[in-house]
Length: 160
Image (cartoon, rainbow, N blue to C red):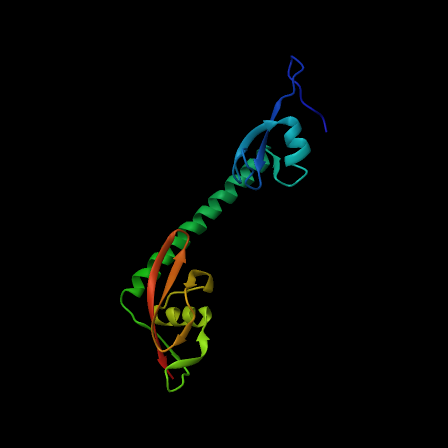
């Protein structure tokens, strides 16, 4: 690959699009100017960046717009889920012994299914943060999270 020099014989900087966060350089999808040697010998060969050609910049901008639309849709869906949780109680029935201890702990999948059934809104297990395992009958608290938003939800476990 050719090294670019200016009229004084000094090495020029090149513009690259970062494919990952690079310390002291920039964040993923940033278009940054780096010394030609650093870009050609380190960033591009290691898959940390690609040249900032017109096509690559357009592709990155399109990808950023798409991911922003997905993030907006996700935030709206989470807001709808939170609004639906205000009007319902989430109950899970599980087999238990006479001392109200469950035979097996309630899983995140069961919690997600119960919330989805109660609200009519889709819920994934990745959105559910469980503190202590639910191993007894009674009320338990879990956290629903999506991005930076979160909401505590009380789950009632009943003996089946």
